Length: 421
Image (tube, rainbow, N blue to C red; front, top):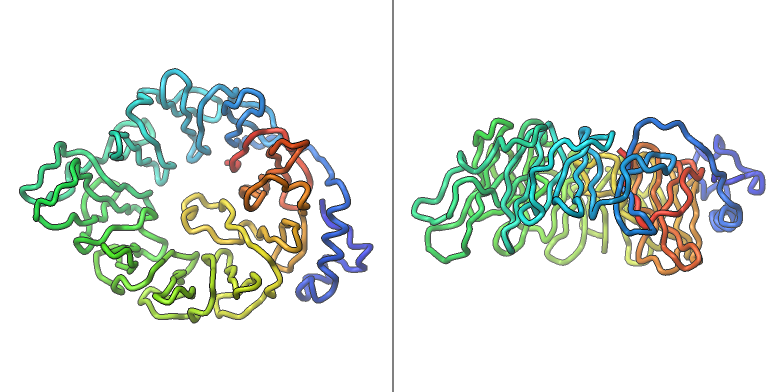
């Protein structure tokens, strides 16, 4: 529920002139907001759906934003809808893809063969066929017809692959490009040299070759047209999508942020932010850090968390005990999760987990009592204006939904709820 600031004699308009902590006592505000019950509202059904786990039978289906089952809970597992379809694991017949009306789009996958499937991106999805400890991929189109395999990816001459179609890496497509590697069926020291990663277009044609012996990051081509790579020593570097090396593998960790910067960890274990040439833009001075999202990044100074902007200036002071990386509004950056998502972030202070905006205005507050038995952050993610959260209800950990303004939409009553699409 929106915090009633009558007690604090501060309005939201006043807060926009500076940080909330400059105009009111945040601790006092948290005490107040934790003492009142959030308002429960009904919202118009706009067709958004989320995977949910029934607390009674432990099975999954899909609910609408009012908590009504649109696809009955009778499945072993689900993933969120993306580009109109969702993947489910049927109890009896293996994997199926269904649309928003619960109708089966495709169900010719055997549960003993299909290991997992990524989300659709640009009309294609990477489907993984499990073979004991190996994962072998191909790309399928909207009709789930295999359209891209390894058949056009170069081979190391003389190496035995066992088949010609399997990919060992298949990233999501971004701006018409993805990164793939061949799947070797046996791990033999044949002396024929390492495999290469390849950049392909949506037709499956190889358009670039990355340096041999460097594995590509599963996130694929980022919005800057670059690919993160890792050498045999598990150090990270960066290449352009045309194969040009931007900088050698020299960092312990490297993740793309929204925009031009990359979060990196140097050889001394400190965190900072670099440009695409590997040069430090924000010095390696933090003990922990998250990628930038929506212009801000969460950084840890060894005692508290705060938020910096892209110049490195501290714009939200370091007063928080913890910060969470929420499931983001854009599923394509889910591997590079930052703190802010749809203008909100989840932070912890004095035992309270709270949702704040960039002015530190608190919207949702969960006390230690409500979080008892929950490991880590009780907030799961934010998507399309809704916050999914976990709460202890009479000793049971149940999930509910609030708006980003702190109004309750679905009471905590589900064993799990994923993000709404």
